[in-house]
Image (cartoon, rainbow, N blue to C red; front, side, top):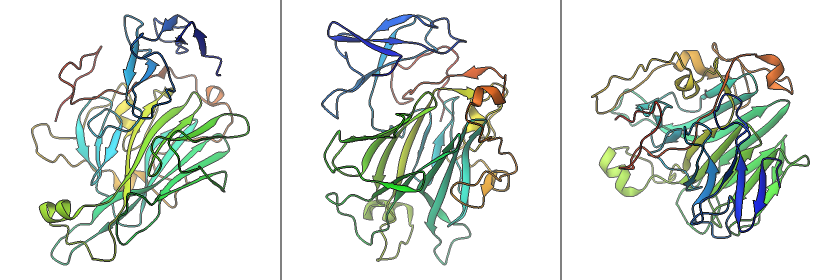
Length: 325
């Protein structure tokens, strides 16, 4: 049990550890209808504390990623920034791009894809995530497959260069030696929750390109590859005001969206600014990552916290949050 969680009766009590929040160090009980942070049912909602809530109230969320929520990166790939604005970032096949770069966190993505003979650009999807924090590395990758089978696990996980083996049963879990990293299956195959203590939580699904998607979007995919890829949603627990990256820059207080509102498919550039040499490199033009163990010693900039929000929800509201498409 972490230092930020204690059990009271049958409900979990959470503590907000964000110093900038009016809820700092307040004990916040989970609602009775959602009392736990790790329920035994993988499909059940979980309780979490939203430090940005002006009323210091615990909330509920699904652990599996929502492609319509803030912090999502899905499809071709389509991202949703901290401001709720949807935008696309195409990139190129077999290239790597920085999604997030901060003083103590680097998240890169490897793109796979296909370019039909009649098209002028690559269709791309996220095939792998490379995560660095301190001196550690963590990867989440999708194995290639010609056809899709729901009963086969397409996930490959590693920590500090060593493969991580998770039993193929829902809620099976693995922790690093010091407990900083936790991996947990949300389904028997192809769905995991990734947690780097105090830094980031990530919901991950593996999905293929279906025949219907291929037909609708005219991808013209070859018959020997279903282009299995990642759908992810990030919840950042501690970002500095200098955070960078294709997605990370949207969490800056001075960020102004490059996406043109009202456009059906707003494409945002930055391929040259955020391209890195490999899955764990930090050599992009705007990368700010430092491998110092304690990120707080690197920067005295104000930390900011963002929770998971679903922009498709009719009742969505929040302090300073605007969801747009």
